[in-house]
Image (cartoon, rainbow, N blue to C red; front, side):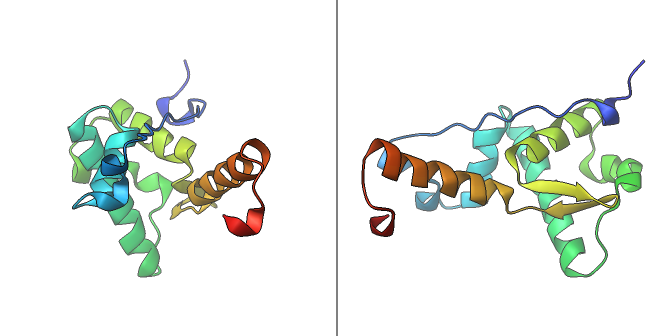
Length: 133
């Protein structure tokens, strides 16, 4: 039997909307809008944001969230173990968080991936010069 926490991490699907009025920066709360593009259910989106906030605050305070604190996090998020690890794996797959030395950390991988995709589209497909991006 495999443990949920050891389940393979898969890619995360993020909803992209082409309508200019749907841009994340046009919303009143961009953080929530991003979470709703990653998670199908509003409750999971809110828990995902709360988990990211916990990670952010603890990381800033120099006391990062340790992976072995999972039971405490389950209580704080009021979620079951399988739901927590499914949510966590989506955040890992999206590149919003990483795990290093048993600690959860915010990650810049999400931003790097988006910039890489934008640069590729701009230069390879649209045949524009990168400096005009």
